[in-house]
Length: 284
Image (cartoon, rainbow, N blue to C red; front, side):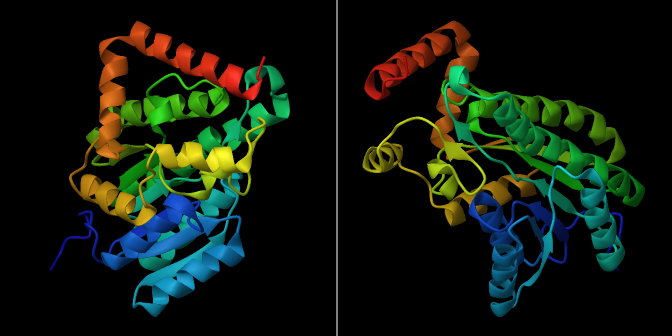
């Protein structure tokens, strides 16, 4: 008989995915279900989350949709506790919910900063705080936090987002060192460009610079976005191997290595990109 003290990869495991109604969260939830995991899709967009859960159930998977605001710690705590009590275990929590507000900082409002920080960073913190003690108590678990390649490099016109994603990378690496002593795994996902709605601002974010829609689409296509289903497959393969930093698509590892090898040169490239965008989109 299998010990209850062992994480399951992924068959018959239990996973919570925040931001599970769309984009990367949805793709991860669907792929987890395909691999035999029971998935809880936690999202403010409950109708969309329920639609995804129903589709997962239709192909024989196990899924449940729950309306949750990740910035509300008591709500996250209830979600985690109820999931644990119902299934008897919590193998994975994917702290994935996030937003972006594309804008130069001179045009940011403090409300924009607060919104990005609350969802992208505090939402991750809340998920960890809600799940960590339960995972310690059961003797296993894997915390997976979604950052971004923007958390590993300078990212002008995306400063607030990059700030939170750098923080999530640092949080994840530091917690991994601490949590390993408790039998808990921690990984951080750093996506490159993935074909999701966040590239156009998403439901809760926005693009506050004047880029014509057609130009924005052309810029996105030049970056060759990876389909989210392919992304999810590659990410879960890396999670199964307990990788610490998961960069997908793999070509973005070159960006990471470049910035680690020469931070000053990486900064110079970022400044050059910003000057080009300043001129092209009148960001002066």
